[in-house]
Each structure stands twice: as structure tokens, then as C-alpha cells.
Image 1 (cartoon, rainbow, N blue to C red):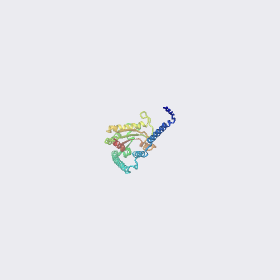
Image 2: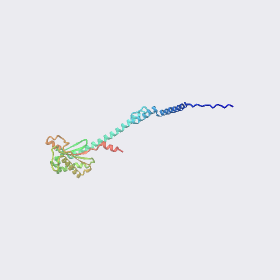
Image 3: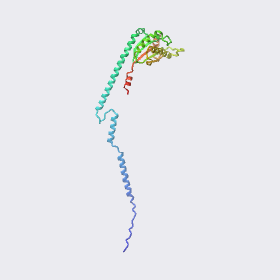
Image 4: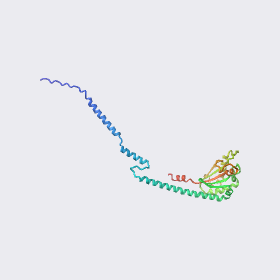
Length: 255
């Protein structure tokens, strides 16, 4: 029987195209998936942005009722009006209190007021009593004269009944002073204010309420252009300070 001839197989040199096509397909699918993951949903992004704007802005967005802000504004206005009314009432009571103090001081010091040795003025800071230095001290000195002690005792009697802080300021004219004890008007004005404060403490005013300030010639009442005007500027000012309504209210409302 004749033998069958063996079939000769040839190598297929184009088989690599199949693998290449599979690789390209997989690569395309990979990029499609990456693109779908990285793409932004614009509608959801816009909703998220509107939510943030609504949270951090007082303006109503189309998605929320406009009357919400209206109610908030009414509530805020009501709170502001109540606080303003409360502060106004406190300020009125303080003003009445300071006016009464000024009247009391005028009653007990009316003879000195008539002699132009004492002047009493209600100011924004409180009630200010200007006492002429000629009534309190000798020229160039800070030791109180005996006649001044009775005047300060009357002032201290009123001040000791109150709980408000008291500021005592010493003032001089613009004539320079150069002595061993007082090298300048700064030292003289401070020493005079300190002498008044020490006497007030002796007369019953708590020292924790007292403040001493020496201002030399820096806050004149009138121009230092005549002996009479210089005499007006040489003074000690005693001011009972009015309460600060805004500051005290803020402290009481703080947690």
C-alpha cells in the first residue's frame, strides 16, 4: 500500500495582528472607562454650588423661599431695636444721675461758685469740678492750704456716697517752673493732684476709685495771654466719671 505523503505546514507570519488588535481594543476600553470616571456631572455640580452659596450668603437662591430672609431681617431688627431702647433708657438714667450730682455740688459750693473759684460742668465724661489753684495752694507749692481742706471735705462727702470712679487732674499755666522739688510743671501738676487725692482718701473716698493725672499746661481753659487767664488755667479738676453704657452692656451680654 502506497505511503501517504506528509503534509508540509507553513508558518503563519500574520498571527501577531490578532494579539495587536486585542491589545488595541483593551486600551480603547481603558480610556473609555477613565473618561467616564473623570467627567463631571454638571447638573449635580451646579446643585452643590447653589447649596454652598445659600449657606454662606444672606441672599435667597431660587431653590429657597424668599420669605425666610425676610423673617430673619425682622427678627434681627427687633433685637437691635430692643437693645437700642435698653441702652437709651440706661443712658437717660445715667444722665439724670449725673445732673443730680451736679446740682448737689452746686448747692454745697455755691459761695465759691459766686466768687469764681469753683466751676461745675456736666460733660460727656461725667461731672467736672474745677477748683482754682489759688484756693488750694500757694504759688509754686503742692501743699494744701488749711482753707482748702473744708472745700475738699464737702466734695468728698458727696463722692463717698457714690461708687463711680473719680479722676483728679492737676493743671498749671505755661510759665515754666524750675525748683529743686519741681523741675517742671509736670511734677508740680502731678503733686497737686496727688495732694488732693490723699485728702479725699482721708475723708472717706475709697482709693481704688481714684486716679491721679498731671497735665501741666497742656489743657488750658483759656489762652495763657494775661495774668487773669493764667490764673483760670491753674486749677485742679475733679471728675466723677459716668458709666460707659456700651462697654458695661457688652460685658453683661458676653457669655
